[in-house]
Image (cartoon, rainbow, N blue to C red):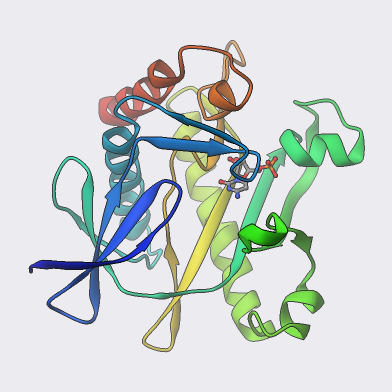
Length: 235
Ligand code: C5P
């Protein structure tokens, strides 16, 4: 398959058309942003690391019956993926309170939630991806209740699989963000799963091994991403 025109450039990735209308090439960049684009920077080799991490995780999820947009890793920074229409809703799954939820509800980071929390946000940069509920999402035409049911069902399965997978690597999956796409009348998992989109804490030390190292200027950002990839590869 041949790479053609760039269709879209996001904060962390570029998407290219291919000579087959059903497939795209996704290129992972080193740029990092936080706080809705207010903080900008580069993390050396992040594109290579996140491409590897996402490819390994999507392949693993496919073996467990989760349908995803991922077809194959093409190169250090590129993946071949099915072309989907992204549902403009970000799904956040939380096992432990951290980040925006800890702040919003006055909880200390690390508070063990008594049940898994599912949040949705309207994917809209101008509005800063506001937190919404299911009725907002349907009322403003972002999705349907039927799609949302499938999305939550898959998000729960993905959480169960990832929690167990990472715990075996000595990593606690605190929270993460998923995106979904419409493909041939179905809803499939899209975007990425990486230290940019998850909070990973070392199970023994609670050391942060994710993008919070960049957001909060904790140092050793690249090293944290390398550590996640190394543990996945050791499996
Ligand atoms: O910032 P907040 O606590 O709401 O983030 C929850 C989780 O979702 C974190 O793992 C974060 O990395 C991820 N997230 C994301 N993209 C966003 C918002 C949150 O990947 N736009």
